[in-house]
Image 1 (cartoon, rainbow, N blue to C red):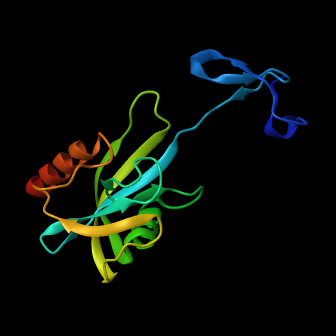
Image 2 (cartoon, helix red, strand yellow; image 1 turned 30 degrees about the vertical axis):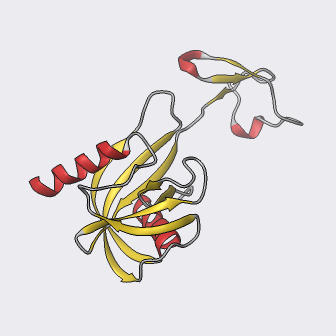
Length: 163
């Protein structure tokens, strides 16, 4: 009989064994363990003829420039998570707008949802988890933190010109 979550109690962390489709299974009860991806949200925030970037105050990519971003909490609406993260990092209140794209790579646990966001209040300042916050011309950006950031900028600019 297959185990259910209620059946799955152990005194400690069970040993995991390989299972089908790249999953693992519990060595004690044979239950398949699914390692779901983690969802993060990032914002492209147009402001004063540029876009807002933050210099990261946490790893990965400590000290490098990137979009305001962060993880979506379980049960949280993605757009609200985006608005919360922008406020936490830049002190700007924003409203999530169009979806720029979803970004993922094989063997990477994070899926990134990128939205354009419009400023509705606040004043730009570095806040929690940011060493600095500034406005940059999209054509003259500093070195960005992650390899997908250049693609995200291109996708955003293409969407801005087509619709």
